[in-house]
Amino acid sequence: MAEWNAYYQNEDEEGEQEEGEQSGGNYKITGRDSLVFLVDASKEMFIKGEDGEPSNFDMTINLVTMMVCVLKIISSDRDLVALVFYGTEQSKNPRNSFKHVYVYHDLNEPGAKRVQEVDALRGEKGAKLATETIGSGETSLGDALWCCANLYSDIKLRLSHKRLMIFTCRDEPHGGDSVKDRQARTKASDLKETGVVIDLMHLMKPGGFNISLFFCDIVSPPEDETMAFFVSIAYLFTFSSWLNLCLGEGINVAVGIYATAVAARKPGSIKLYRETNEPVRSKTRTFHTQTGSLLLPSEIKKAQYYGGKEIVMERDEVDAIKKFDDPGLFLIGFKPMEKLKLHHHIRPAVFLYPEEDEVKGSSCLFSALLKKCSERNVFALCRFISRRNYPPRFVALLPQNEELDEGKAQITPPGFNVIYLPFADDFRTLDPPQFPLASQTQVDKMKEIVSKLRFKYRSEGFENPVIQQHFRNLEALALDMMAPEEIEDLIMPKVDQIDQRLGPLVQEFKDLVYPAYYNPESKPAAKRKTADTGGGAEKKPKVELTEDELKAHVQNGTLAKLTVPVLKDACKQFGVRTTGTKKQELIDALIARLGS
Image (cartoon, rainbow, N blue to C red; front, side, top):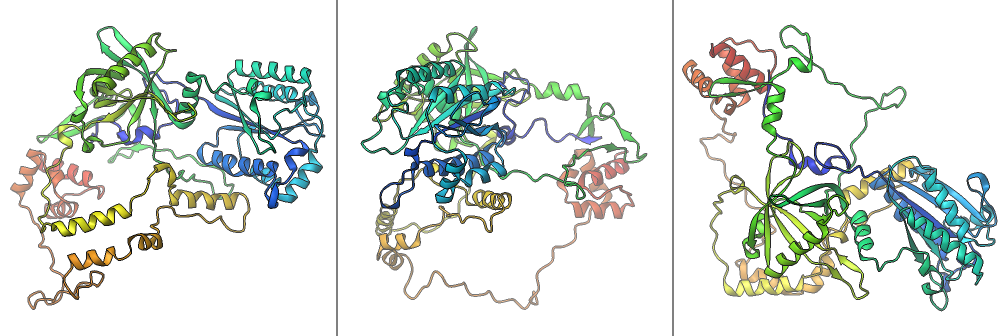
C-alpha cells in the first residue's frame, strides 16, 4: 500500500502551474504574446547626434536587441517577435507585395540566431551593414502596416495579445502627402479593429516631435481608460483565472485573478541522451515489493495508519475528500481596516478585477463594492477556493483606488488586493529570550543612524543577482561570446556611501553600548575542555526499546515518531527482515511482525 500522506497539492506550487491550465475551474487559455517592431529606416534615422551621440537607428537596435529579444527569451521563449523596416530601398516581404518594406524577421519565436543577426546591426559597422542590406528609400507607412497585418494573418496559433511598436524620428513620414496619410490611417484603423495595439516610440528630432501632425490618428488612444487598464494588467500582471465572487444568494460577480508578484526561478534542466543530445522522457512504474509484478493504477490504493489500524481508501474516495466546494469567493462579512495586522500577510497577494465579458453587470456591482469599502475604511472577509480540489482559505479583500500621475496616466489600477489570512493553527507561541533593555541615550543615537541611512526603496529597482548571472552565462554560451557580461549586484551594501553618511555616529554608538577596550569584531575565546570529557565530543546513548514498548507504539500508531536508526535497531533486535531502508518500509515491516 502506498502511504497516504497528504490530501492536497502544495499551495506554493499554484503560481508555478502553466498559464491556461485546465484544472476544473473557469480558466482561460491565454495563448501567446506577439510583438512586431516597425522601425523607420530613412536617412534621418542614421544621423548621429552632437558630441558623438549614437544615432536614432543605433538606439533603436540596442533597445530591440538588449531590452526585448534577450528579455523575451528569458521571460517567455514561446512568444512571437518580428522586426520590420519601412522606408527602405530594398524590398523583402511575403510574396513581395509591398515596395520599400523589408521584413528582417517574421513573426516567430526569438532565438540565439535572431539575436546575433540583430546585434550585427549595432554600431558603425551595423549602420554600414544596414545601409548595404536594406538602404533608405521612399516611405509608405500604409504599406508597412498592411505588411504587418499579413504577418499576423499568417499565424495559425492562438495569440493572447497583439502589439505593434513604431520607432521613428519623423512626425510627418510622408512629407504632407495626403493620399499616403489617408492610406496609413485606414490601415491603422483596420489593425486596431483586429485587436492590434499600436504604440509609438518617437525618437529625438531637432525642434521636438509633434505627435498631433500625423501619429495621433495612428496609435491606439491612451485616453481610453478601459484599454489602458487592460493593457497594463495584461503586460504587468499574470492572468490566472476568472472566478465567481458570491455576494449573497443569486448575486454573483465575475472577477479575474491576477498574480502581481511571482517568484522568479531559474529554468529547470533538461535531460538529454548523451549520443544524440535529444531530450529524454522519464517514466515511472510501480512494482509489487514481494512478487515483483507490475502494478496498474487501478490496483493501487492509498492508506494511512491511524490508531494502529490501516485505513484504506479508493481513488474516488480520496478525490471526494479533497473537494470542499467549487472554486470561487464567498463573502462572509466586513471588518474595520485596523483589524488587519501586518503579521496576517503570509504569502504574496493576488489582484481582483471584474470580468464584464463573463457576467454582465459585474463591473457596476464591483465598482459599487469597491467604493463603499473605501469610504467606510473596511475590508471584505471571504472564503476563497482558487482551484478545484484546493482547500479553502480565508482572505481579506483590501480595496485599492485608482491613482493617476500628473499626465493623467494610470499608475495604480482600481480593484481589490486579496490578502491570505492565517488559520488559528498557523499561529505560533514564541518565547523570546530576555536581554537587557537599551537606555534612552542609546535609543536616540540609533534613531540618528536610522534617519541617516533612509532611502526610497522600490522592489522593481533590485534584480536577483543569481538569476541575472545565470542568464548572462546562458547568453554567452548561446551567442558564442568570449565571456559573459558583468552584472552589478544591486543588493550589496555601498559601504563607502554608508560611512560617508554616518561619519562619527557609528563610533559614538559603540562607545555607548560596548564597554571600554571591547572589540565586537574579535572572535570569542575558546571554551576550556573539562577533564571529564577528555576533550572528545559526548556521544548520545544508544536507545533500545523492549518488545512491549514497540507493541505500544504499533497500537497507538506512533511508530513514525521514532527515528530511522531506532527503527533499524528494532528490526535487528527482533529479527525482522525488510526489503528496504526507508522509514515507511521499516514501519510496515514492524507492523507486519508485531501487529498480528
